[in-house]
Image (cartoon, rainbow, N blue to C red; front, side):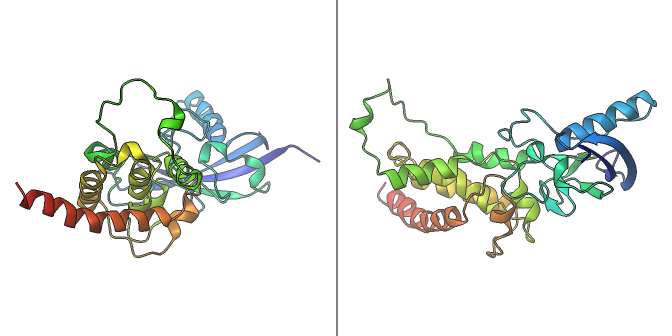
Amino acid sequence: MSDRTDITVRIWRQAGPGDAGRFESFHVAEISEEASFLELLDILNERLIAEGKDAIVFDHDCREGICGSCSLMINGQAHGPQLGTATCQLHMRTFPSGAEIVVEPWRAAAFPIIRDLMVDRSPLDRIVESGGFITAETGGAPDANLTPVPKPVADAAEHAALCIGCGACVAACPNGAANLFTGAKVAHLNLLPQGQAERFRRTEAMVETMEDYFGSCTNHGECEVACPKSISIDVIALMNADYLKAKFKNRKSLSRR
């Protein structure tokens, strides 16, 4: 049985935000089934450069499923057909030899195309900048026993913290909502004791910044399916509950001044 495969890729090419854009088809022969999807693009780019043509622009960094840069829509699915997998972890053995693969950038109003497959995902950074941190000085690391955290709570916070900020949830959502991303960033801090001092200010600031850029969540659930870390939409429910509390508690504290 051959461990090599032939693939045809239809890739979105767009010179810049103002360009109309188009699909271009490329045949890539004899590629190893063990190659990652990004390695497929590397091989194709080497060929294009050797022919004096423009390389395909795409985001990448760690290539270990950690950084979230490898944001591609593959055959209409965020990060491709394999659930719980980032594009950089997707291997060519997933596709049958002779397959045609359609590769596009994230399609979301909040993520304008920079060039080809690269989009501007900075609105996600704006959400984190508005409150996704703890400012309290905690000093040296205390004994673990001094801050008891129930294991289910610690597990839930760790699960939410797995979010790599790739934007797949936004790209998969019919409304272009970022509630799964924001919910994960809110939950992993709000669930732990260290996050309580700024819990309601954080939630209010992050949710309202999110609403400046993204659509509204209507519980389609596509975000959870597309997430390469399989983060549960439970984090959205936690965020919504804390946001309602924040609108009451923040107003109440202001009225006492």
